[in-house]
Amino acid sequence: MNQIGLVAQSPLDQFEIVPLIPMNIGNFYFSFTNSSLFMLLTLSFFLLLIHFITKKGGGNLVPNAWQSLVELLYDFVLNLVKEQIGGLSGNVKQMFFPCILVTFLFLLFCNLQGMIPYSFTVTSHFLITLALSFSIFIGITIVGFQRHGLHFFSFLLPAGVPLPLAPFLVLLELISYCFRALSLGIRLFANMMAGHSLVKILSGFAWTMLCMNEIFYFIGALGPLFIVLALTGLELGVAILQAYVFTILICIYLNDAINLH
Image (tube, rainbow, N blue to C red; front, side, top):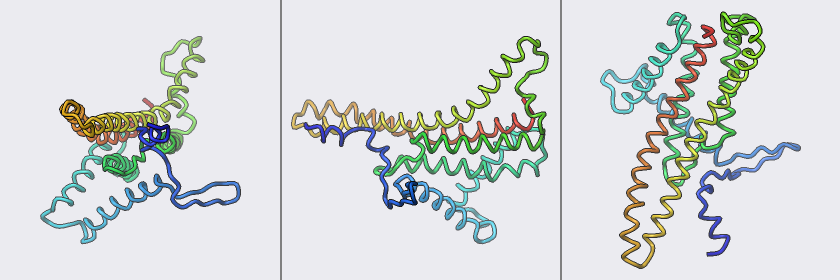
């Protein structure tokens, strides 16, 4: 097999960003890529889904399957906000609910559509997950300053700390706080990329053995094939779990900023 064939079968090819509509503005390169396309498709899908469900003023009295799904997701995120964010009235909590709901739905649909063959997994790119986590982190920090002013810095120094240890603990708490945004993006990116790469590697291995013209290889391929099916189901669960973990961590960080835990 030549070098070109080896490159074409690389499990990392599925993460390649391909420009669909190249655009240049001066020295800046703005292109509509496959990543942009699938993000747009994801947003369009769940916005149209919610629109068609609620266009009759709240949906049907007896919900169908799609309406039940939307109501389930809505109630799930709403209960998450109510349980994880304390110290606020219900009306104030509703201020944060739309942002958290859209973030959860966006990640959930991005992760799930990445499971479709020949699609593109948007959340498998570190730049995208990092941009999302940093923007949310900056927003949470702004909320903390709006609520507490300069007293927000008190979270850097726990109560009762001896004065000689104060500079060390302030630096440690500041690094820990800033790394929240980094860890939030890395966790999502690493899980999605690792899972998809593993499924791709085992799928290629099983397919190669199935294409052999010997019965021994055909029988031997059944093992990797069953493993691929099991990993696909596991990856489907990881796709849902990572959207949940990302969302619940947002709620926890927001609660810390509001209540200075």
